[in-house]
Length: 328
Image (cartoon, helix red, strand yellow):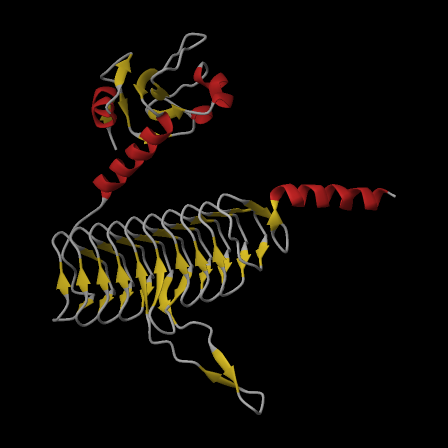
């Protein structure tokens, strides 16, 4: 990356205060900025660093009124936090390399590969697969027969996609995540051993989804496991068979969602949340870290805490009594 303040302002639809020709080559936090770097100021608690920053360029909100002289060239934008996210995406897109493929990968003759697709070394794309334009398939990725992958996707090295999966547009799958493995279905036999239940469904992932490294999304026993549009799933999560996750829901690392549970839209799940199977969780539900949801959540907009998870106000009252009992 090597951009002038003027170019940055054009990309971000901002205005320059200072030297429009000053060049930046990298990013830094506002407290660590150095010459040649770009920082941003969006959180009021970091305002002290605005006046001491040595960064060359500083993104600020359009309505920011400095209380002291500011050394960096400022670029005023509507929302500095959103602007830096947009800029990071712009730089990442510029760095992406497009090529058809190298000789050290396998693409089945019946696969349909779009324009400007990158296929890395030792990747495998199976029969009758479809890969959309400008998708990046990294090294050692496996794409099973009949899988459909949309446009502008990024599959980082080591991703495994089982046959028959459906991936939307603008999807990011981080290293070593697995899409479409069998669900954990076993029926007890009379002698106490287990009979494996075959899973013949698939996984459908919507548009603009990001799934973290080493996360697994199991195929459905029948029909589909569904990840809605705009969903964000962190690293090391487990999404079981026949789960349905609503649009724009986000979950932090090490969450586990058991089979056939339906999670609504715009929900937030903290780290290590566990949800038992066959539940329905209403839209706009927030579940605090390490909570265990064992029953239906029917009312939208609640915040749950604890194990078993209960509404936040109830949890605080119960916790106050718990603390008091320990002091006696």
